[in-house]
Image 1 (tube, rainbow, N blue to C red):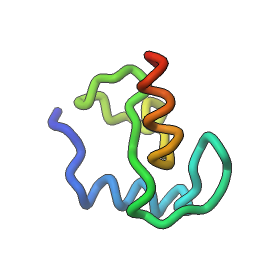
Image 2 (cartoon, one colour):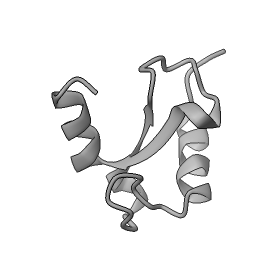
Image 3 (cartoon, one colour):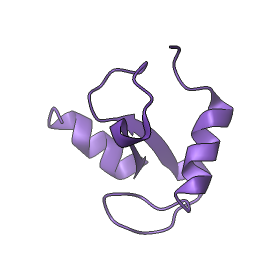
Image 4 (tube, rainbow, N blue to C red):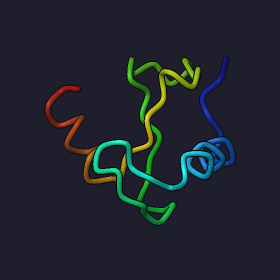
Length: 65
């Protein structure tokens, strides 16, 4: 299984309503990223994916989460 393409990431963000899972706020697509909970970019099952704004994604990685 390969990593997610840009088109797949965009589709995930769209399905989630362009809402950050952390702050529950709507964001521009360019301000959202798809995060793999287990940090395995090849594990693309929906339950392993989170949509986070850049701020929360960076915060999560800076504390090792």
